[in-house]
Structure formats: structure tokens, C-alpha cells
Amino acid sequence: AFPDYVDEHGKYRTPVNLGAYLVISNGYKVLVDTGVGPIPFAPYPDLTGDLVPTMRQQCGYGPEDVDMVFATHMHFDHIGWHVTNVDGRPEATFENAKYVVPRGDWNAIFDPEIAKTAGPHSHDYSQDAADIFDLSRPVAEDLLRAVDVMPVNGDHSLTDEIVTVDTPGHTPGHQSLLIASGNERVFLMGDAIHLPVQVEVPERQVGADVHPQLAVKTRTETLDWLEREGLMTVV
Image 1 (cartoon, rainbow, N blue to C red):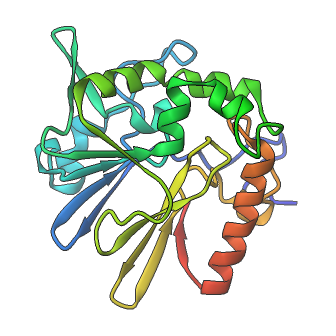
Image 2 (image 1 turned 120 degrees about the vertical axis):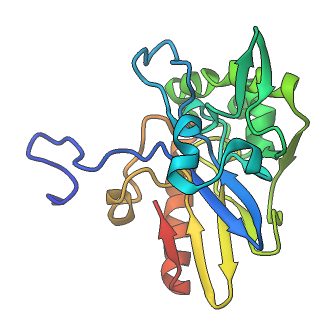
């Protein structure tokens, strides 16, 4: 039914976005996610990212220019460059930045039982997705050692133009961003939606959704809200 998105073999034509965004708000530079890092993870030995080596070429700024690093969620393909190993110890890649993470993910990455047994969605749980989430724990542990992390939830203002929005399901504490400047607004989804086709079929689940039913509910309600508000979104 969606030939623009899926080929005759059922494979997606559009790749999953593993990128990052640099948002400049009144001169304050906010890096949203850092993608896959320089060191591959065991299940994906050929997957590494090039954010830092190409950052200055891509956007004219280097790691030292970033004022804040915000993670939409704690999956390894979104926090891979948060820290860098230097002589066997983790250090903040963005040395001058404040590091902000979703509180729900930060708590669950160190205590997996939270996502499994606590809260109203404990019955809605994918062990396979939780195993993927657990792959990120070494990065989180390095992050804990290297920087003073600020966990947030709800409508938290990163700047006077950028506000966090809870969009849980893909991970326990996943957050998106609402950016408002002048008369324009844009919504950065993160992984609340992975692929454009999910705009058409939000009930389509992704294998990495820790709480699959909650993720569907979040996608459906978020898309309804975006349509009502006439908001532009980035998937």
C-alpha cells in the first residue's frame, strides 16, 4: 500500500535516521543526539559514526563550540559520541557543554527492572527491545564517570525557544523537542517515529520499542496533535 516507502520485497526504501541536529537558539548551540559513536557495538561490528570528524565541515562548528548536548533517549545510536575514550578513561567529547538526558531513560538504564516492573505500562514490555536498550549501559556508565549529567522530564525549557516533550514508549523516558522561534514551530521527533511511513501507519511497531503499545499510543496522539496544530516535524 506504500510503494514510495517499501519495495516489492517488503524492505524500506528510506533509511532509518541515525543523525544529529545542531539547533542554534539566540546564539546558544544545542546538539540534539550524537548518533553512532567511533567504537562499534558487538551486534553491529561494522557500524561506526563520523559526527565529530566531520562536524566542522558539515556545520561550521566544532565540539568545543557546543553549549548543550541533549539526548532524546539513551540508545547507543543516539549517544555514541557523548563521551570519548582518552588513554583508557572516558572524557566528555563536548567539553564546554551541559549534558541533558531524559530522566526516565537515565533511571532505567541503571535499573532495568524499572521498565519491566514499575509504572502503569509494566504489562507492556518487550524483552528483545530491552536487550537493545541494555547495550547502551556502558556508554551511560562512562557518561556518569565523565560529566555531571542533568536528567529532566516533562516540559523542561532547554532555552526560551526549546522545550522537552515526554514521548515515551520507544524507551521508558523518550523525549522529543518543541522548538518555537518567531511565528514558526517545529517538532523534533527523535525515535518516537523512525520512518516516514509510520506517519501513515503509526500502529506499525518497531522491534526496538521497549513498551510497544505505549509507543503506538504516543505516535498516534502526537501525530493527531501535530496535525491539529499544523506543526512542521522532523522524522
